[in-house]
Image (cartoon, rainbow, N blue to C red; front, side, top):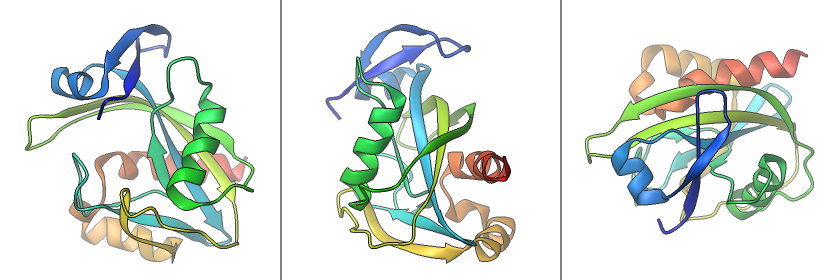
Length: 171
């Protein structure tokens, strides 16, 4: 966790930088992104790796991360999508954004201005075992039903980000 994160205000204006671990210990608002890769009525989901610093083993969207200092959100999203899934030929567009805050049992706090990107892709992907223990396309109706009956199986941000992605898909 040696990355430097971009700190932002509630309007997503850059206000500084902080090391990733310190940012999460102090619960500082920082810029992030979540990527949702659809294939028709399915969504590429990942079950977060058991070694992740928070939300291990929880189901989440296709990819999520933070842009680097001096890196645009769009370039960061394309870079991380390839690093986490091996997908390098999928057009992404921003569907919206939201702010969320979640405190975890390990003392870390996720406080993010999260930009939601969406794309349509039906090809092959390669799971990065440092990021995920499992990755697969799942039917949207099944995801929605599982969120309703078992919300604790999903990463905190996913429950808020999925509706943003779905609304963005309709535009």
